[in-house]
Image (cartoon, rainbow, N blue to C red; front, side):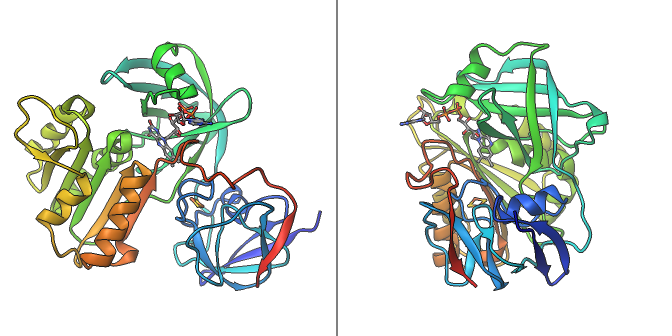
Length: 348
Ligand SMILES: Cc1cc2nc3c(=O)[nH]c(=O)nc-3n(C[C@H](O)[C@H](O)[C@H](O)COP(=O)(O)OP(=O)(O)OC[C@H]3O[C@@H](n4cnc5c(N)ncnc54)[C@H](O)[C@@H]3O)c2cc1C
Ligand code: FES
């Protein structure tokens, strides 16, 4: 197996990589966090410019919407030394991705289809996370499901997850119906580059369903900062019962009036007099110009994609100020995104 060097410009950080694994995995294993979200070739969050070198995708993988000389690092493999443009990558490594057992401390039902899980990750594992990141739960057959932390990071290794039971969903229904305190899960993480940027820009926080989880983590960790910048949280669901943490948000709002909350329902709910329709459309009704804002969007991939397109193409949002985690599921996977096979030359 040939080993190559992957360099991130402009910081100059270097990691070893090979054609056996993705560029992103090589970076994460070494403690570097280039932009990424789904790690499955679906969300394009990991798109980066190849400054030099030759890379390839696994046979059968066809990226969508990626410009010339740019690649999806979660799928691309190195065929030579490679340099990527990734201004977000620091010169020195940070967090490490760790695999660990996690014990279920508590589980409860937040709504008719959302479970709240409180897990203990042993502090000795070295696991830590930034608000907005997620972990993979590794199932017995080796398949994985990703869930965002919903609490603020804590030194005791406690993490909280919001898991929505999808119709026909294998793991989420197992969690909702069968998981109980003292059960053990296997987790790997943290993953994800979705995190609050250190600027003064006013914020639009946009969530659908359990997309609230990473936003909740950010709010709990950085509430005073977020409110001081001025923030509006738009949370969309089909029914009022889908917005399972309204009291929690109202308590934060009461504490910090700089945070405003706009619940939006897409279905009909008897007696509902609040906002209705698609949640991203409610944003542009209130903010036709978004050029001064940062937007943090999480949840349904269709909503995240629509928000990105509408906000950046029609409402002046800078593409670089749209931060997102699309909750891609096996249903949203592209049919051609099969398992890795022999790489083929792609670009240099
Ligand atoms: C970065 C990231 C963060 C995430 N964070 C969260 C979170 O915080 N909370 C959360 O609830 N979810 C989150 N998700 C989604 C989560 O990872 C799982 O995808 C989700 O829970 C479904 O897993 P499952 O095993 O229940 O469903 P799966 O068994 O994987 O099925 C998913 C859906 O596809 C359908 N399906 C599966 N196979 C087929 C098929 N062959 N034909 C037709 N339909 C099919 C199922 O019926 C189901 O509706 C996140 C995803 C990503 C990528
Ligand atoms: S496409 Fe690579 S992280 Fe989503």
